[in-house]
Length: 432
Ligand code: CMX
Image 1 (cartoon, rainbow, N blue to C red):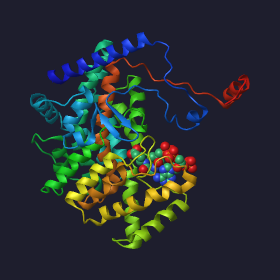
Image 2 (tube, rainbow, N blue to C red):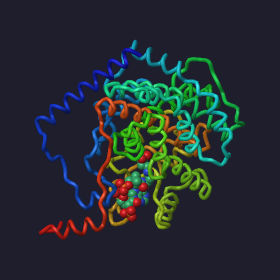
Image 3 (tube, protein in one colour):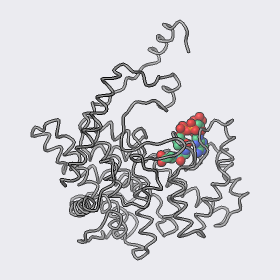
Image 4 (cartoon, helix red, strand yellow):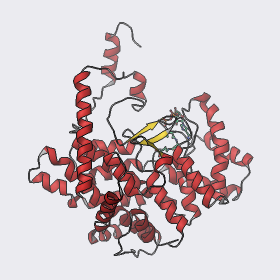
């Protein structure tokens, strides 16, 4: 892995040099202010973390090292990981080296299957996924090196090493969970050296011969890879990593955040929403009926899954990318058709709902991703967030490796009490 290690090393050095220079030029610079609204509003908009793997522009969406989605949507997850962690796409030789390395590390230890098979069958797949990763924690090379006295300068190297070991195993782990919970429990194994996406497709064990399903899996693993550092899952992973917990802990923790319905679980919720529409109104509901269904859902005090975003203020370009795939491969699918009807009615309804209080009425990635998997026969929608999680781990690993390399300190913001706030406001001559 010399080529990857050298590139990551270079990147870390460059980023650190740049940051140190800026710090020596502007040691006391104010780059934002914290308002009472920020404090009450989930720290929304507060600039409080450095993340160089990706950036989300409210109006243009995800950028990875300056590349927009149309520039990387046809890449493989391996190429995306390389881009996230090094800042550039791999050349053919670098990619080959990474592919071979990941394929070599892809077998899940046998004790994991034993542990996962002993769990009750009504467990959520995300719980199993997170547990499976956590249970491999003893495999951490960083942990063992640290215990025997590792220099701070080398923390990132073993975080990268652990990351490669973990990423390589996720397709087999995820597919095994799918087989245990939804099929007959028989794990599909292979000695073949497959790419991450092909490995997942193969081990899931259905639609194996559909090139467009394999293409969807690849796209799925690419589009969910990273969304800068402040989202619930990445931020959680970064916080855990900052305590020098190893990548297995940091990933498991991040995935626990992804499992929330306001975050990654929204893709499961969306499919539940769509199938509820179909159950009540048939597979080809009219636009008017969809509109009534949405309004009723809001009147019941529920959210419309897949709509809204904490940062984006336009239709999520990841949604657009999946739509392009759907139009090409399954435009007549009733699930995709309902996604389109929702796209026609929901933004109009949300724009005026709660007196325009909703910051973003447009769809996010979760509004469409599951409908495509459902079309191909992956109807156990509880599994969708696991697929999201495989991809998002690329981002966690890249962010955490770089954070370690850049000597990120332990993350520890200050919390305050009501009494502190009261005293603070009383001490101000003009309270805001
Ligand atoms: N349906 C109904 N109400 C919504 C809504 C939606 N899709 N999106 C936002 N709102 C509501 C919020 O609940 C909030 O209401 P209250 O003030 O009564 O609490 C109000 O509108 C303002 O919220 P906001 O500032 O627009 O949105 P936030 O930044 O607070 O939250 C998000 C963002 C994503 C949690 C929210 O839009 C939401 O719940 N969407 C549905 C779930 C979803 O799709 N999540 C996936 C996001 C992408 C991802 O992480 O994978």
